Length: 102
Image (cartoon, rainbow, N blue to C red):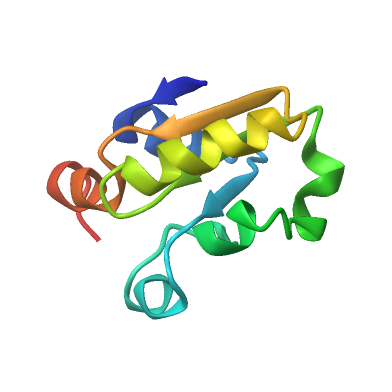
C-alpha cells in the first residue's frame, strides 16, 4: 500500500484526472463532507462486499476516511483481494479540511 498526500490528490483532481476515489467512512460522514469518492464503508470491504469495485482491480484506487486509519485497513484488505494499486489518503478528511478547506 502506498500513501498519497491531500495536496497531491487535490492537484490531480483539479487537473481533471480520471480518478477512482473510494470513501470508506459511514454514510452520515459521507453526507456531511466528501471529495467526490464513491461510498463503500469499511464494514462492506471487511465483508468483501465490493462488487462496485471489482472492475478496478488493475487500476489505481485511492481510499480515504476521516483520519487515515480506516482507509489504511481498507487498503490492506483490498490488496489481499487482488487490487494491484491501492493508495491511502494520508490524514484523511481531517488533513483535507485543514490543508485544503471545504
